[in-house]
Image (tube, rainbow, N blue to C red; front, side, top):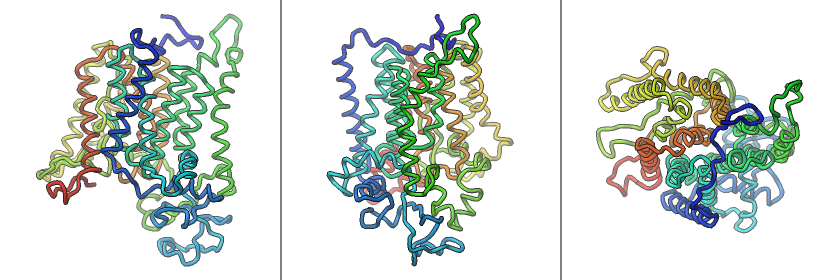
Amino acid sequence: MGEDSAGFPDSGINVPYLVESGQVTVIGWCIALAVLTFGLLWSLGPRETAFSFQVSQANNIVHGHLDMDPQHTRNFGIMERVLYDGDGFCFPPGDPQAELVAEPRFSEDCKTYMQHSIGPALMVIPGVLVWGNQLNQALVSVVIGALTAPLVFLVSRHMSTKLLNQLLLTVLMVFGTIFWWVAANGGVWFFAHTTATFFLFGGIYFAVARPNPLLAGACLGASFLCRPTAIVTGLFFVVMFSPFWLRPPAPGRTLWQRIDLAPAWSFAAGIAPFLMTNMVANYMRFDDPLETGYGYTEQTRQTNLEGLVYQHGLFDLSYIERHPPVMLEQTPIFQKSGPYVLPSLFGMAMWITTPALLLAYFPNIKVDRRIWVPAAAALAIAAGIILSRGIVRVWDAGWATTDIPLGIHLLPFWALTALAVIWASLQRDRLVLACWAAIIPTALFLFTFAATGWAQHGYRYGLDFTPFLWLLVAKTIGDELKWYHVGLIAVGVAVNLMAMLWIYQFEPNQTNGWSWVTF
């Protein structure tokens, strides 16, 4: 096994295309996957959303302004608002919402802006030019979700030489994760996730399958414009492109002399237009290129939310403890009457919505039975303890995982994360290290945010780093597809299909009179 220019052994990426599959066959599979994905997203999804605020933002841009004018904005009254008049946070005169804020300031110049990132709004401008504010944002989201499937497939072809494995890996990402539910939704929060995931997979493709720093940087920049958190995943690309910007060691060559800035500048050039677009939009709205609008959001000033959610502002280290219970511990709602198992709109643990993500720990240690067997057993015990929390509530037993001292039931997750990084470092596995370089900082950054996702299926913030967890799973499976790999993928598809049906399709007055979803 040789080393690349950065000194990493061959990581097993850039697997050649299937010998028996010509280019026409590849295109055929891409089209088939896009059509299948579109059909399942659209037919099982809500097909509309009341929260089409990226379309409304685009409509306001078309009409010549960045603020949200009520006459150009659908459902203006339910929008999460940013309020600014050039001097600071404000309220329009007579605004009834002002009574929710202590000592409100009124201003004739106060304008309303959308709280969320502007990238998805820019994407739908062509559609708005044709259909105006009536453009169906849920349909656009479904189209973007459908186009993501071929991208995932093209990346999977460089993680395995076997067509079945490639297709199963594609199914895992598109239908075995919360991406299915999120892409079908189309609401303002979820549309941002869908578009960001699409561009992230574009960036991964140009890092793993067809390495190109410029195009990878452009995809990362576009993803950032949709979900600013995506910029933290840039460390993945820094590590993956190390053979480009870090020359191999040579006698008399210093570390500084090993650095080739040209690829780094190329990567930066790809990102730069999107960063500049964001900064210009920020300056035009809030007179500050670094102000995203969250500094003037109405929510953080409402006294009921300020004391309950935003005690320390939007971001604070004290919020870290809020996220692991949702990301790792939250179970479905179990009950004695039908339908017996319900999705929890508070959220569900990522390993419950997508059990195959647990394979992300094993791409390097799977070869050593002395490590992976106890590691798998520890995960199984932790999962059993957490699931039992939800089940025993059916009998009002009053026992919960919070009763376990120091949260030791979560130690297998944290320990295996550390072990996976250490083991990849010892083996100098560039792909695995790059993935963890994206996952860990992104997760930690998300953990400092005050909210945990509000009403959702799964842990939606986790979608920001799920593509890199998926890559680790793909590396673990490779060409060695096992029965339990298939089983884990199948369970994930079943759980997410349940969410599609329970939340989007079943109504109490139409289906047995049961409640199909709760918090």
